[in-house]
Structure formats: C-alpha cells, structure tokens
Image 1: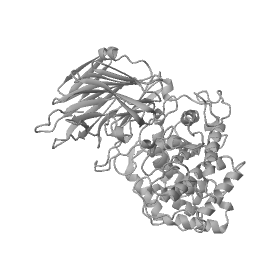
Image 2: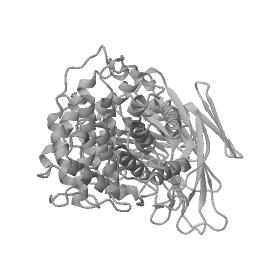
Image 3: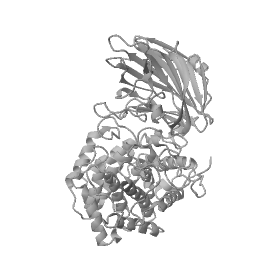
Image 4: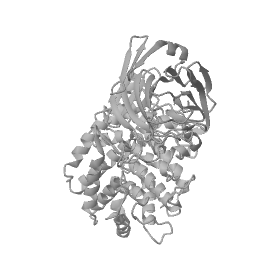
Length: 639
C-alpha cells in the first residue's frame, strides 16, 4: 500500500517511530496539504470556503463559514505550533477572512448567531483558534475588526442552543469574550457546564444529551470543550471553580481504555455518527497531553494518533484535490448526517491539536510504543456505555460488542440508526448503512421477520444487563407486524478470540401469533472493491473479501432446520462498493433459544470445524457452551 497517495511526506523514522515511521514533520505535511487543498475554494475576501460536494441544510453561506471556521482551527494548530515562524501567509489569510466575515458590507459576511443556528458550532472553532493564535492574529487586529468580532460573538449571550454538546459551543465562545475583556454572560457559561453534569455516567463517559447516545462525541466534544474552556479561563483570571481538575480526572479515566478502540492498522472502531470527521477520534488523546492528565505513555499517545491519520492517508484521505470528502475513505454519504455540508469533515482538524505541543514535548520525542492489540489478545469491558471490546493480535482487528448505545431519545422512541443499533462493530468493517440496505437490516442484527413480505423487526431502545470482561448482555423489544404487543429479545455476547458466541432468548407476547414468523441472524458485513466470495453449508454461511477478510455465522443451537445464505449489497458500505453478509434463518417456535458463533477474522475460517468444536447445552434459560480447548462459556437468561 502506498505511504500516502495524495500527500508528499518526509522520510520515515523507524528508530523514533518503529510502528508508523511518522514524526511531527509528517503531521505538519498533512496539515499543510489540507490547508493548501481548500485555498482554491475561498471567496475573494477569504471569509468563506465554498467546497465542492453536497450542500448542508443550513445553506451555502453557512457551509462557507463552516469551511473557514474548521480550517481555521487547523491553521491555528499549525501557526501556534510553529510559534508563528514560517506562518505569515496563514496568519494573513485567516486574519483577512476574519475581517471580511464580520463586515456586514463585505458581500461575504457570516450569518448572525441566532438560537440553535449552525453558526454556533463554527463560532466555537473560531473562538478556540483565536485564543490559540492570540499573539499572531487577535493582538494585531485593527480595533474596528476586534469590535466587529466581539459584536458577532455577542449573539451567543442569552441565546438558546440544542440541548447536547452544543451547550459547550456557547461556553467556549463566551469564555473567549471574557478573555478579551468583552461583555459576556457568566450564567451562560455556568449553565452549560452545569448541564453536562447530567450527562456524565461515570468511568469517564458522557452521553451526548439525554438518552444513551454513546459514540466518539464523548471524546471529541464532551471532554474536549470543557478542557479547552479551562485553557481560555486560565488566561482570563485563572479561576475555574475547581471544574478543570474534575474534567482532567474524567478524561484520564476515559483515556485509560481508549487505546483498545484502535486496530493495529490504525483504524478506529467504525461506530456512531459523524464518522466523516475521521481522525478527530484522536482529539482526546492530544487533549490529555495538553491538559497534562493523560494516563498514557507519550510514545503510546503518538502511536495511536499517528496510526489513525496514517491509516486514512494510505487510503487516499485527503483525496487527489487535497480535500476531505463527505464519507469515510472516499465520498460515502450514508456515513454522514443530513445537516452535513461539504466542509463538515474538517472537524477532523481537532485531530491536529497535538501540534500545539512544542516539538520537544515527550509525545513528539519519545519512542513509539505498541498498541494493546499488537501485544496480545484483548478483552475490555466498558460498563458505562455497555460495550465490550475484543481484539486479536494475530490479525490486529478490534471488535466492539454493543449492549448499551442506541441513539434513541430518553423515551426510547427515536429512529434507530445503523451506526448504533447493531450488535457488533469493528475496525475492519462498517455496517451496511445506505437506505436501501438499512431497510433490509441484515448485518449485525437478530431480526424477527413477518410473513408475507419479510419486514424485519428493529433494535431500538437497548436495555443493558451485564457488562464484564468476557461477557455482556442486554434486552430490547422487537415489534412484529400483526402482533399487538412486542417480542422481548434478550441477548448475551461471549467473546473468545476472534469469535463471539451470541445467545438470544426470544419471548413471544401472549396471545395468537401471525403465521410464518421467522428468525434471522446476520454476521458482519464485509466490503471491498470486488464482490466478496460467498459460501454456505449446513448451518453456516461465510463471506470473504479479495484481501482475505472473512465474516461467518455458524448456527450452534436453534438453527438446525433453518436456511443459510449470503445477503449482497451494492453501494451500501463505507468500506467498499460491494458488501456481503452471511446469515441464518429459521422458523420461530416459542420459546426460542438461538446460539450462534459470529466470526470476523483475516485467517481462513473453517465453518464445519468450528461447528464441530463447540457443543451447546440449553435448558431452563441456561446455556453452556463447551469448546474443544476446554473453555466453558456459561450464561443464564435471568442475569
């Protein structure tokens, strides 16, 4: 694989960085390429960057502001990290844009800050960027420009934001106003910081608003902004009411298991919304170093961060234009949100916060350390979000078993989402998320199918039960057309190396059931440029990509009289245009107990041998699985 097809990188340093070869110079090269790539799309006054791609729902001017604000954050990391040396062009470029964007007569002025407007998001990036570049930009602005900037930011005072991570945009922006001696509302700052306390669930984890919305926003928003606020507050009067120390302790707790989310190839687990921000996933790593609260060794911090950015660079990100398209690798709109505009991916700029650390900081000078998954097989339980991670050293894949994050509202009635509702995610796969595939909802799901059209049930509100080192479980209600009441599906996951033994107890509602209800279990969707190979046999199904990634589902109990198959999709998956999911289907008989072996591996998988290697005893709600290596896995439905 080429080092980076669309970025000219310096030579690798395998002494300092034996795992990635990357140094600070590589980060600077990528940052420079990204900033160079957007330059041709600037408006004449440099206040907006109108990038190509699907427009966001806030309009072209808002999209242009987004292009300025998010790339300004990247430029700020580059300017401040260099101490302004060699950054004259960047300084002038973004100072000019600031003057034009706040000038109502310029013809490219930014929209005013109003309740719940997209401008609030972008203002926070500008506030952080102005704070970090203060000696080179803010302190040198004309008085009239400063007054216009303050006037624009003042739209935050007393304004209403969405009740989630948006509260923190107001906090950071008004603290910036305080830092430059401008009027602000202290109650806005205190209120926003008080509100996030309602979303803290322990062990370093926040939800993004009410409900069980666990994803990367915990790191790149809920931890990031409070500590950036503390940096600005420290420059104002040094008083933070003791909050900063609390935030530092929470981030330390969050970061301790965070390395387990990354595969040996640098890929983060593909779960949650806004995945088009890509390497923003490393932002909390740099934040921990900036706030001097990380429990991770400096060499591990850089290994994680460099590995993630290198992972995307090797796969053509940025693209041949130097741009970050809406998607994961190339353009893939199902991995975005309806509000995402062409500059939205530049929240990835948060992944460059490490450039704010001086070149002689240990994160840049320490020798790289291996990731956990590069040293041994790993099992990591995260009870707060209800996740269980298991990674395998031999292929470097990390898998996330999901028994806690569902992205429904607090009442559980929201729309389910393929990036939250699946039983499992990984660093090597993505769910089939295009609308035509999501309707079928095959991969990573146990569906009850109603005759005659086979409409699949959904997994909406997830109710966590157990989350321990080698097992996790939850239950959910499954609505089936023709039934007045929902089914109850209780599921346990018991990982063992690259395999997950998955146990489902399906309880039917009282009363008559419609004819022809069946049960379908889908494994991981694997995707590639070429159509994956498909194989099926008695009680098993398998899909294998051209580069050797194999997904298999093997029925161990309850599937004896069922059918097997491989469901194929086109243009449905972020990892490639051709995707395939192995699945099992059988008739439902109450009460239902179904045990499957779910495999995802870069090894050759032999389904017949795996099926013969595990024996299952299921009776009275207790399931015991005995493996030929002597391992015994046990689960009781009453747990």
